[in-house]
Image 1 (cartoon, one colour):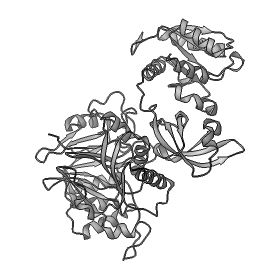
Image 2 (cartoon, rainbow over the protein chains, first blue to last red; image 1 turned 90 degrees about the vertical axis):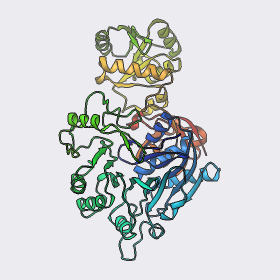
Image 3 (tube, rainbow over the protein chains, first blue to last red; image 1 turned 60 degrees about the horizontal axis):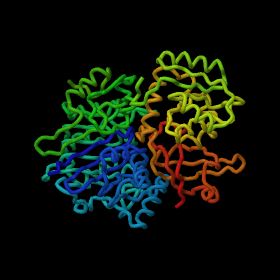
Length: 330
Length: 216
């Protein structure tokens, strides 16, 4: 009996989730750099049944380019939405590798990941729902304007994926969806409720006029018990933004918050020595002591969701190492 | 002292500067390793490597050896690696002379800045080195087959500028053309893509190595 689980991989600034479903392994975004390769090697994974790419940003697709070239794993299907606006050479690199692999019969490369894929992703007990984008948005594509004259960008068409078990919503993976994308989601009347939510765009700014309000509105819709920010410590970024956490807390004061790495807002310095609370799975920040929760493992059991790192050990780490922790509510 | 089952007690110091050798000797003494001074001159790389393997347990080597040796430190450390013998490159030239070091970088597990050489970094360095010699690569050194895209070819400086999308699609890396096999050199132009083994976990572009080039 395979117990389905989800790993939210610490890739630094970026997103990568690996779903171990009862009839296959599905990767949702692949983060930057080679972290996914490390995880696949560590877990001796031989086949990935599907890779779903939420949108065309480097912190979501670099790892796919790495994976395709590495040849370390068999890949069944890759699905993505076209993004002519992106026009980056990285996007060209990805399409180059996908086209080559597709031509050589090594995988199936499909353009289009929309709400119409509701029944196309059956890999076992965990249902995979695509809640956004609608085909309309995907067809218009980044760079176009919608019928109200609003500019559609890469984040607007970000795929939003929800995992369910026995029709009970469990995890919402919201890519980098922005406020325009969210308004389409709301207009669709789709229920986006989920126990666990991977917050969009790493809790950072992505063109929203009012980040705190965006967080409030989205939290109200999702009603999460657990919120995950997949963030990196290095570089100029400092996520999640405090107004995001405030907006979130306003609507869900008791939700558990986990950041993969230690936010600069929570501590000016990094911990010294071992971090015994971290699960024994690859985390990009482990070597540099940049982890807060590190990679997060979730057992997808309906009546008893189990999350690693364990809450008390994680809290001890936060108390000891994050004097200005944004998440602290205990 | 046992470092991951690799016994080290005698360590040879190779540097064209006698004062630098003396300073490193004192550091080694702090680790209770016996420093073995190599006064030079060193004429044959093969002879130097075989005599070192026969007489000491490990080597610390400077890179630029001027008239002291007829080879560079990078060359020597790479040769030791191929012979599965622990050696660390300890130099102030790791950034300034990257073009000369890059061809050997696949076989140099540890490059230590001269100013960073202390008992802790040397112990850690030999630990990393011994593991890699047993095939256990650290994340920053593990090779992966990956895509490389040419951005620009500069004939005057004999250099090319490339991006490794799976490492960092936003950072451009300068390589000398000599690093590449002839078949790839003949095809170099902007947007030309090829594959090679690269250590994608590297944090710094100066620590990247390139091996097993392929054309599509």
